[in-house]
Amino acid sequence: MSLCLLAGTIATSAQTLEPAPTKVFAFWRVQQLELDYRGHRTLYSCDGLRRKIAAVLQAIGAGPGLNVQVQCQGVGFMSTAVAIITVTTPAEATPENVQAATAYSAEALLVARLKGISLPTATDLERFPAQWQSVALHRVRALDGGDCDLLRALAAQVFPQLAVREENRLICPLNPSARMRTKFVVSALVPTPIEPVSYAHRIERSGN
Image (tube, rainbow, N blue to C red):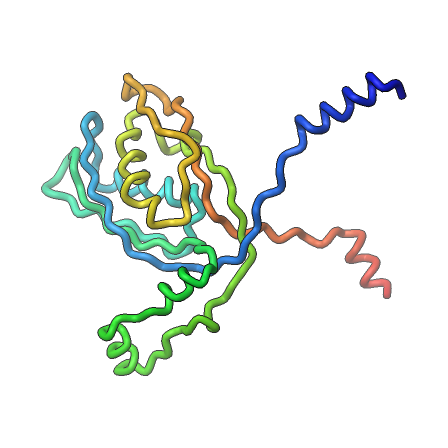
């Protein structure tokens, strides 16, 4: 192989090779968050707003038990609403996060004692491998250009309380009826996928 061909092969491999995701240990954290939505161009029904919020949270890795309750004023469509969100997401198992998750208020301790419930300690929290992953929110099927104000509100009020980091600034399109073409990518902490054991490896083990 000539030096030129070898150099070209190495350059091509370097362009296609992506850096390995940063892996950490995490635990599931349950939070109740509030979103105060005040739109300028888009009107939502109660159910429509609930579904949009849920779609975004599912895209960034919300676990089972996601619940979004929208407090509507009156009936029909609205441009302002308050949503109460109960969401389970991975949290990096840093000493600070673990301490915060197991630091209970006096009221919580009293309720647990009366109900005979043992609250988890730092050693009780189940850890699992997780990694930071890029999520293109502008590609979520449930969203369009009219949902840009909603995304902006979630990025300002909800994402900072979750393991979600913005990779670029969100700029809303001038035409609210347009498809969400503005690139908006975030980094979210998600569980590391479990690699399945290959079929050949299973056969080899079963033969032994």
